[in-house]
Length: 160
Image (cartoon, rainbow, N blue to C red; front, side, top):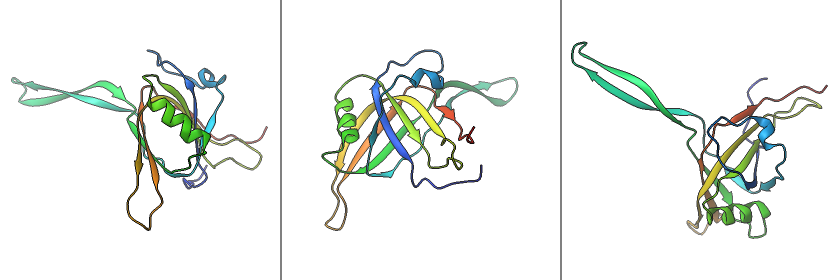
């Protein structure tokens, strides 16, 4: 699959879904009912990084580095405010809880007649703030997603 643009990507929120100690797999999200969050402007970034653990070895005269816990990061999502959008309303409601929610990101990269790439993860909505800026700007909803799971990758597939 060649490279492709972010344009056409869709972000959706599902129901409250508890994090678990083992990695999620795609089938863990099969029973979700998805509500698309519309008017997306920016999706930010996500993906695992390990915490660095260092040890200063006196005899080796060397700093040794080890991997610690992993974090899939914080996804900063920016939307044009739409007071009637069910997805934005669901994300705002999710911010008011202490629950993790299922999220699905779908890319616009499906081969002719095939299925697109998808990413699934569980996150807390840590923030839902309005950004107003100046007269010649669209009012925005900034969503902060604290990802509390691995990110499940499903690649685009050809038609069968």
